[in-house]
Amino acid sequence: MAEGAHILVVDDEPQITRVLRTALVAQGYEIRVANDGEMALEIMKDWSPHLIITDLSMPYITKPFSMNELLARVRANLRRAPKSEEVAELVEIGDFRIDLATRTVAVAGRELKLTPKEFDLLLYLSQHPHRVVPHRTLLAAIWGANSTEQPEYLRVFIGQLRKKVEPDPAEPRYLLTERWVGYRFEPGN
Picture 1 (cartoon, rainbow, N blue to C red):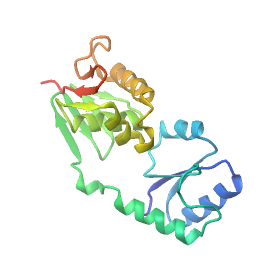
Picture 2: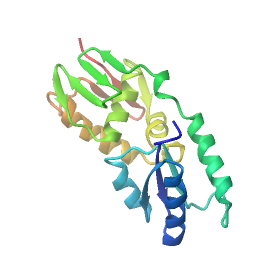
Picture 3: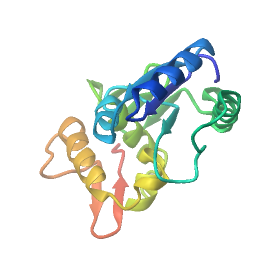
């Protein structure tokens, strides 16, 4: 997955983002840059990175860092990501048809326009039909391990997804809430 992989760089120092962008583009990666977390979330509404490089107060690569070390870590992390050929290209379950290659979804023959995160959320739930998926599990799977304490993301995205997927979002039949626990996907016929 290395060449062409999407990488989001989040850092408030323009000099560092400029150096990272130059080095990563030279390696064949597609790069987007955000100056803060809010901008990063905005970018991720329409673009799904395979890897995020961020300046957080955590054991990451301490500054100053070696560009060779950073590139080696990027390659290692991208190698560990699941390969697209390891996943079925088409998920057909109940009323749903989810095409991973084109990232399109149809419900009962009706094409939907989903954001990348909505698509990822629906895909994950469709891979666990009829089972309650806990809030923390969904948050970690879609937004990463550091997001498990932010259930507001999930409520907002489930609400948006219901508006697009459900015939009547007020009376959901596909995306069901299991109070205080998580969500359950019922694919229909």
